[in-house]
Length: 218
Image (cartoon, rainbow, N blue to C red; front, side, top):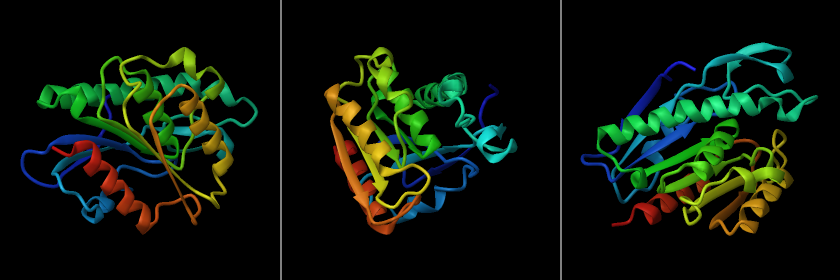
């Protein structure tokens, strides 16, 4: 996969860390950028919003759109290779942020929907300790085999999971199953659910800011 394009935004000078935040299927890097000024942050942070590559999506009749992996209901695990490729592409962004001067322990991986799948996959398996993993309206890919893929570096890394109780795209039961898979492996998961669909709500934006403050607090 080619090097990903991305938007970047810093909330102040000398950011305490970097959040790499991936959008959902069919969206792009601009999707979550407007949320940054709404976050009640006590620390300055750098945000990186990558663009997923454009690819045909089977579930949408082969229509081409930005996506981190194909979705084919007839073959749910067929997307595993795409997911591995996207994890590798995001890892290149992590390495670039480390080259800029951040430590791995200053980098948080975040994502919404498809982007959250990549965030969890990357964060749980990363060989270096990361600061946090934020998984919004999403799930763990192939959770039955999760224990085979995780590393030891991030067993204590804080995970923020949030989901809408009325989500028509990814039912909350799938997210709860994923949460349980993580908790069975003793990951520290902070869980929030909201009266919303497949989206982000104002209360959730507040909670995201509070969580980022808690993990980056000096």
